[in-house]
Image (cartoon, rainbow, N blue to C red):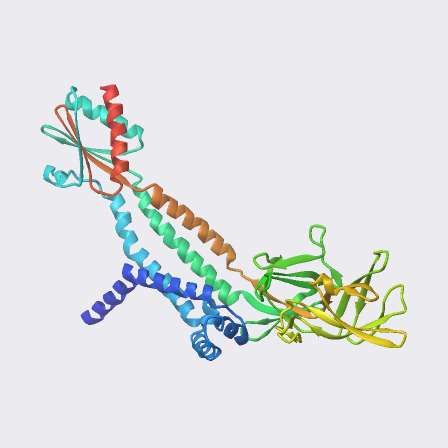
Length: 469
């Protein structure tokens, strides 16, 4: 029985350990940092492509195997991260239960007079000599201390009086308010993890979908449709690195676009999500996937500089307005480049430098010309200026969606944490021990922390006493 009791004490002391709290906090922080660096919830190809920026393809594939094994590409939903959060919550709970009763008991315990030799060992001491006798000094000092919000306890001596003054003592409970806030945030995070909705959906331009795929591959039907009217991406100059990408979407419900604040078309960008019916949509990724409905869109300028909009499908001829010339798109490159021999080639699958090869037919003769969307010099043709605007319906937007019922708890916990930290940092308990003998006052402070603030406060107390003396 004694051995069992000893074992229980060891287990309790382990979970009540501050060292355990520090170790768990460090490991959780490292895990969160990994989740920030490594792309989360992305497909293997995207993750390997990310690693290949820093190492060889073979090393990237081996590293991905390690990442996948430990769920480092899904850190915040991994079993080990959830376990760490649970352990941290358990540690906070046990620490609070272990120490709170002792603290509450200390509030009910009456102060005791301290021996002079104990006072003399305190790290802070300040003396003041005045002409008044000890009784008058004690009365004036207590009046000043009460005016500053201190609770006063006095102990009479044969040659004077000992005054103990305390302020903000119960603010020591603020650390438990911080513990509670962390616990609430952890509960909110776990509720979001296990009861929330997380998934993704890829929507090709010009199409709509009401089906998302969860992180574990299950279908998530939505009570409305999301339509992508248009997707666009901007790249840094002479680079395949995207600068910005955005989706123009509509919410279709009961066959009609939903209007919110007078708008029925909404923009989703990185760090600028869109929310509807508790579901938040984030811009996550994109890709190139030409569909049957894809259209090559041009702007034609005639000799009088009048504009005409033209839409055409691949290898389907269209009329050049105001002429008898017919044209058709016979080839396309999302990133047209030119080698040293002057031959064209496709540099990437990204829409970095989109171009079309247009075939013109006039009086039975055919000619071909590459027209690049970003190079105006290529727009000029023998039949007028033909500007290539875009290939619409050839890209898809990758949206992540999330519904997190734990968010209100996280907000509440964050507010409590701010309150607890403010009290802990700026309303720390203050205690002074003062000996008044004859015409001399001696201040003692039991801690060397914040000594400059204590000196300033005591100086103000002394100045007020001197004015009234």
